[in-house]
Length: 155
Image 1 (cartoon, rainbow, N blue to C red):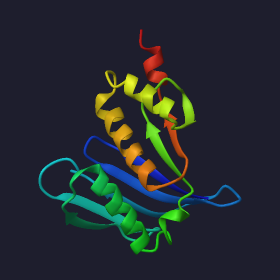
Image 2 (spheres, helix red, strand yellow):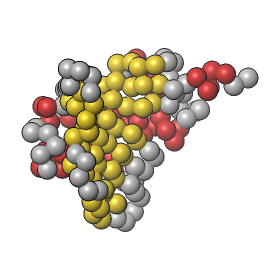
Image 3 (tube, rainbow, N blue to C red):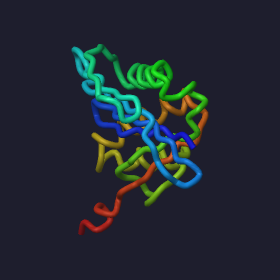
Image 4 (cartoon, rainbow, N blue to C red):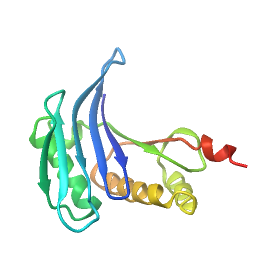
């Protein structure tokens, strides 16, 4: 199963394409990272195919929409995947929502993430934005793994 992974920051996007075989062994097919996505000036684009060398380019990216499309196009162009249809699911490490553990990112779950913007605005806001972009581009399940246990124990 080929899965895209997104790790989103307020101005960065780290991504990997992984393959999980029928023995549950995981291999990284490729990775691509962008920083300074929402700032003026150039962005650093680092990428690698498989376990090959990490390469770096300086490019101009205007926002998450442009950045996600650029990264996905790079994965296809460099043979990490044959086409976007190879991606069977997307996974995200989310910080805070009503639910705990792994969840399909349904409209209700995304609404719950929005309800917690006051606690995690720097993290949840770009995640909500990028999940929406991936949803428009890929017709696959979007899964979020939530790590709210710290927040539930704060008195």
